[in-house]
Image (tube, helix red, strand yellow):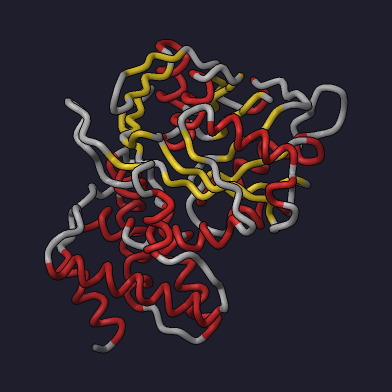
Length: 338
């Protein structure tokens, strides 16, 4: 198989870089200055135990990649960019006939729980991936992946759930990831794990707009955001592993490390603001809870405010941490009336 990584940011470049290092054919797809740096200097991937310079092949648009029948498309763009990416790749021709949408599998290596359904509108074969992979991308061509002894845990499954571990393509992808420094479990329902991850991601917007989540006000907002999420999923009848189960499966396998000269940065939403990306994935994280809450009659004022404020930060080009948790609490109080 050849892995075409669509969106070679922190997650995509780490997955692609480690696959390439292990001998698996890989292409990174990136844009702008990041593409130029990858093309000219290769991928600079820093791990806890070593720094790598990897000459991974890179492309800046779909037409630059001649697709083959053995390709796997790994979609690792932010959720707000999913539709545009799928529209660009679905109709691309594959050697021997057909298009990417009809002949190639696409793996949604993304936060959020809505990307797989969007992909299934276009692609016949869709896999979900629940990504536990601490990594940062703030400088073109350079990515830091801080976990050890494994770089990440990537639960994989067919979408919709059907056949799971019996799928030969899925087993091959999992095996390739396993020998590239990742754990790649094959649960019966990968979306249950992605809903659990969604709850963990509800603090992303909070960290992005207020900075590190510490202190009574910030921790209180985080607890309330998660409580709203759990209440909404219960009302919707959506089951998921709890925090204890998540911790159990990762215990001793994926642990963030301090890397000399590479201080740990904020999460994916924080990084979007820090890079001035102009967009943020709050609509697909906190906004998913807001949507389900409105659908099932559960109020979600904390997630509603986090979504709105994070979107406003991205639109206005504000830097991470420019709003206090106390002020954010006041905005929630104004919305909820309590």
